[in-house]
Image 1 (cartoon, rainbow, N blue to C red):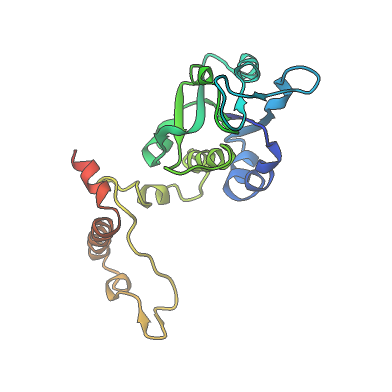
Image 2: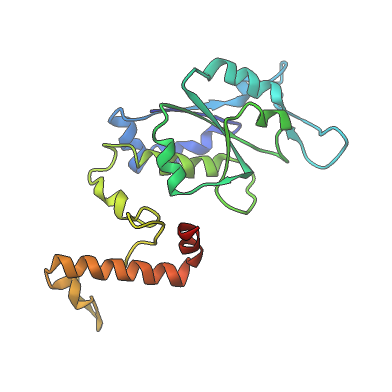
Length: 228
């Protein structure tokens, strides 16, 4: 998979993309990530990328022409262009799995007070990571990129783990069951006996039960969605 990211702040990606899972995925050649400074396609000698909104208002709006020029250079027949915006579809695990099927993603980081409305017409999809406002689309892009990359076959050593995580249960959108490790008894906080029993069938049943209980208590909306 190839991921191109258009941003006004490329240095923000250095830490997160140079560590952990994303770094290992790149080292293995399973994903190629390129960060592009949108100012490269800015206008005039000052490489302008934003301007005041027509009709008045506070702040600056990202211009369409730099984005259009960047996509002219980067977009291919197999590309999927995603605009990161609070107005997009709320990102979830199902969307992450769907996006792993793409061979080329172009992620546009929105910024300032918004983007020229015509930029939306250049994107295939708009994605949000939640109902709140951030300064720009850089952090949401990092979130989306990691969620996708870790699901690419071969990235994680134990791929089975991704199928047991929250929002990835075979029975639907359930939260992950409680997990424990050594010691079995810490200051009288004891690990459930069933997990020490060695009975795999009972352990599976316990985990399914706890997963359902946790979802009912913390995220009942997930159960309603799976029933609709």
